[in-house]
Length: 278
Image: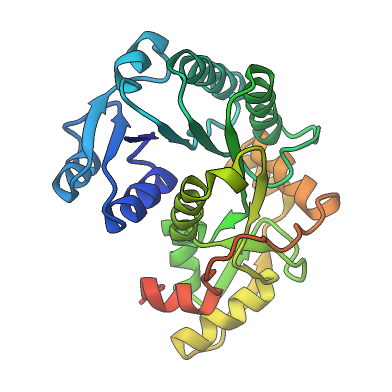
């Protein structure tokens, strides 16, 4: 049995979808089984189990008869300690349950100190997993293409401008969330290779200006790119995310190509697949 933690989240949902498509039994850990997102998973064939990452005791029943676990922890800007507490409690519960394989989805640049709370929290969870000696694989996804689906971003695109917190000409690694589901499933199916490894995940590398050009070509009209001033990034997105975007702009290297043998989704294909901004 595969347990997907935070199954209604974007990454959890992608893993559930990939596993169901491959005919695998899936159990989804959800806080509210009556939510619309949870009901959709149940209708698709996911076995729901109620649990709360803030209540470690609730994780024990969810882990019964589970051999594999996928976990991508919800981000809480400004509350990194909460993500760490959740991740460490989950790792401890997985160790007690003697799970055979954990796939933990962290992020790029979480294998070393960065000074960015959102990344440091994932580094601490990775450290706990390693300290416990768990049989684990760490995924390091790039920025999600799906971040462009934020209503404010779509509204600006429809007016002719892609507004970004990063420099318009800075190459940016991107990944479609559905590719994370495929990557997790590959790791479970190739545990003898994947355990003990970490894998950067990105399907395309495009600067925001090139993203804007691709969006404009898809929509059939000109598209500009404009960088949001760092002070406005802090005002609208908060201090922690502002630090992350400054780190990416000034210090973060582009990741190496992933060596997972998977068909990654190019940005243009993703646009067509979601009928972006139409």
